Length: 228
Image (cartoon, rainbow, N blue to C red; front, side, top):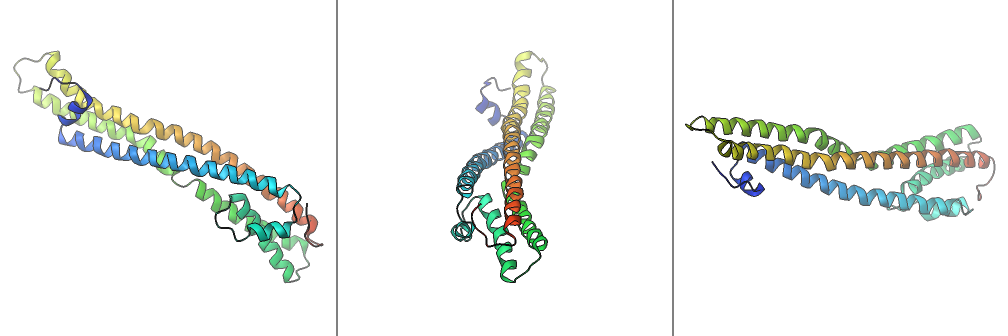
């Protein structure tokens, strides 16, 4: 039996199955942290971009000028793309001389709702991965622990005298898998909950803008689109 109870030594002396479980959990943990840092950056960029566009939108700038500025921008904020999709549909129907204000408004709203759903899907990307890591990792670690304990007891069966000193290393090797499973799961769960709240707030911002912009378009349905 191995008497060195350092983490590295325990992993090196664990059974192959436990080592395989630990390696898988470490890879999952690295992937989880990669997603977490990437999502932190992207959601911060979304928040800052939305706030900057809202400030520009409510500054009273002419809507046609604003559309010409952001309409073809590919790296803009979600609010910019939603505005552009609604404005593009509105102007397209106006060019066709559609006189039904309700039809123009409904078409614009549908375009904005479709754009909203695309933006929401983009913000929610990889959240399911974090949820899976948070829910599955402890069970994978538990599997490694159970297998390690079984392996340890099989080894103890060949000993004539069993003491705490002979039992402890084998049990400790097995418990490392559970510890690493929790190490992978806890950050993923915390990050998932935080990102879900941030996305909910962003979704409310986008939906509020759709309603407000729809009201502006309704007022402009029968007249040239100006400021607001």
